[in-house]
Amino acid sequence: MPATPAWPPASTPRLFVDQPLASGATITVEGAAAHYLLNVMRLKIGAPILLFDNRSGEWLATVADAGRRALILDVGRQTRAIEQVPDLWLCFAPVKKARLDWIIEKATELGTARLQPVITDRTIVERVKRERLEAQIVEACEQCGRTTLPELGEPVKLAQLLADWPGGRMLLFADEAGGTSLASVAAAAPAAILTGPEGGFTDRERAVLTDHPAVRRIALGPRILRAETAAIAAISLWMGQHGDWQTAP
Image (tube, rainbow, N blue to C red; front, side, top):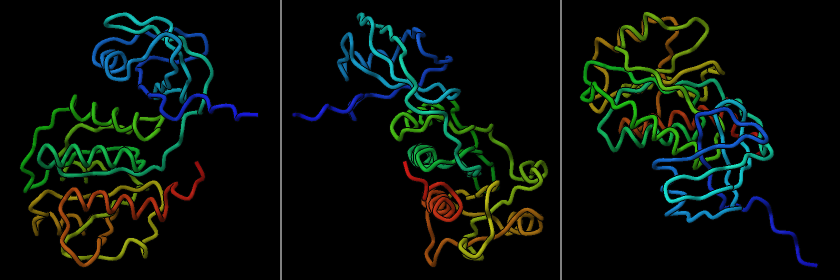
């Protein structure tokens, strides 16, 4: 007897919708998302699609109507409850466009709870296009299976970040000048990682950081890493030690 095919198929597209989902709800998809589903994925009536809303987890829907520029989706059963990602923030100095997009994408995929741009003395890119970063977050969540979007903070200067730092959250300062290995630091959640700009931190900033009671200096190996590499390396190390990487899918 032939095996029953898995449902929904592994190739089923995932889509974020910014409206509450529930069994029996009807969702209208328009704009760029509709164009992608209609003209790239070529979804037809009856085709499955996975939806998540950043509120209630993931739901299986089917295409009820497919027009030229919009789709009507009928929401069926819940496939996954909302996930609880580890309480890790990434505080990062914005870098040039393509590298910044890469930081946002990979930090989202790795499970970071909050993304916080930080303006430092040597930050070249002081203005970021929030809409573009939000689109990168959504796309990464759709691809990697996340059911929650990481929070995206407004850019803040380093001095203000430290002045407003919440009690009880350790700030792991990835210092290119050296520090303690992350494996030897008791840095369980809630925690945060701070990475710098292309030119690194100034001596003044380093002194301010090391004087802050929440800050712990960490080293990321014997080589000088690009800003975007340092961010992703630090997240990976923390997730392997304190995060949810040992949790079965």
